[in-house]
Image (cartoon, rainbow, N blue to C red; front, side, top):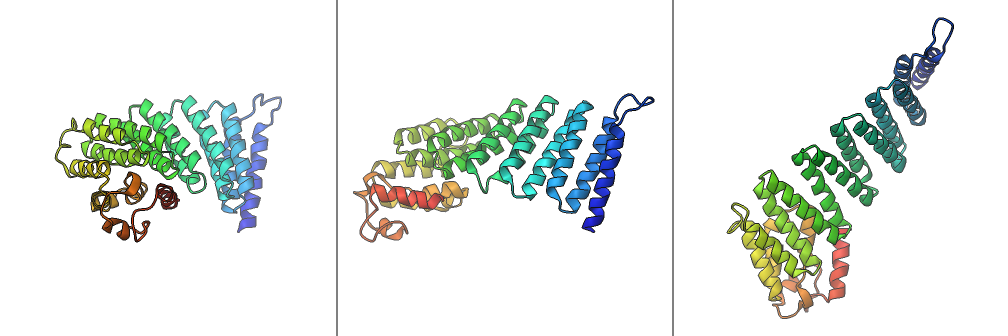
Amino acid sequence: MAAQKINEAHEHIAKAEKCLKTSLTKWKPDFDSAASEYAKAAVCFKNAKQYEQAKDAYLKEAEYHTENKTLFHAAKAIEQAGMMMKEQKKMPEAIQYIEKACMMYMENGTPDTAAMALDRAGKLIEPINLEKAVDLYQKAAGVFENEDRLRQAVELLGKASRLLVRLKRLDEAAVALQKEKNMYKEIENFPMCFKKTTAQVLVHLHRGDYVAADKCVRESYSLPGYSGSEDCVAMETLLQGYDEQDEDQVYRVCNSPLLKYMDNDYAKLAISLRVPGGGGGKKKKAAAAPQGGASGAPAPEEEEDDYEGGLC
């Protein structure tokens, strides 16, 4: 089966080369037909699991689409070349081709296609390179935002924010969450604004910035329905406990269903949160927490270790 497909691929390549030849009666190469034959060859190689040859055929297809001024089809072919690199587990090269295709989509006036391709690239690279995934998701969000497609943009921003938390780039995560929250406010999705406020508080407290955390809650009072909501009461209680170094109160809020069932990266922030200094509160909570010792809350250095372990 594989050998048959490889033979078919070579037949298509031979036809493509014939399309490119000129003669006394044929002055111009037939780039359109050549691109079509290389596309067929690429599919044959792909079906035979000859991914490197398939990649080369897709790049040839792209070359002749470019000659023919059909840039959208050229970009599609380059994106497919990237997928062939993915099949070979060559992720950095795969992402390079997909990013190149995205630039061509943008030049061709199809930004939505570019943004969707960047999103796909982010998903591909996320298991092995979180930093690159953040970059791709943020680029995709930016494209959608420029097109006033805020619902799509904010979803991608959310992916980037969560990964920034996982990477412990908390200053950047705080900025990203504020942008998310502003966007949800713009599209009037207020329940999501509440959730983003909770995430902001957790990030700021892990940064050791109580003032910024408190400010996020105060600013959210202007959101319809926030004041007195479950989210609001939980954050007020958390901030009070944190400020008064009441370990028991902080533990209760951070281990409540409201916080424990957030997106995993934020839930980990919640369960690893400790009051500054770890003193003054009841010892019951520290003993119950898996990270704490039997005789009290962990020291600041141990807090950081617990946090690092929790986010790996």
